[in-house]
Image 1: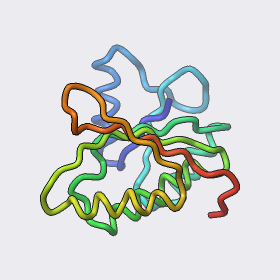
Image 2: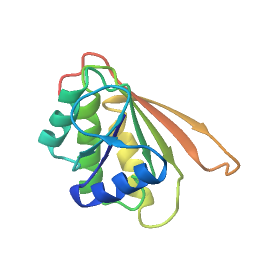
Image 3: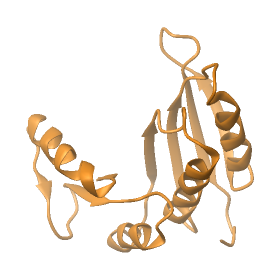
Length: 143
């Protein structure tokens, strides 16, 4: 398991790992939780993450889309493509459609995702609006 965020958030991730009675692992190894830097749109960060693992089976994300400008969402999409490429990797994302300034960008993001991923959506939980979106990278896509 690899938990990722921008550099300045890594101490908070490590703190939360410790609060949950776990320990973040350094170096390579299986069966432990790694904390790694991943700035959206930075291929070197993605390459470092993918280089540590033979496969990345799942990428989990929650509430990363809402309110973001298209430029940032484009970097998120590129990052997901880099992490999932050639391994038929999957992204599991929780998303709640919202009205307001970010809504059009949310819809733009998922339309762009359909160019590179197969998307399935399912409403979940008590809140009928929350959706679980599973995105599976298409085989033989050349980035």
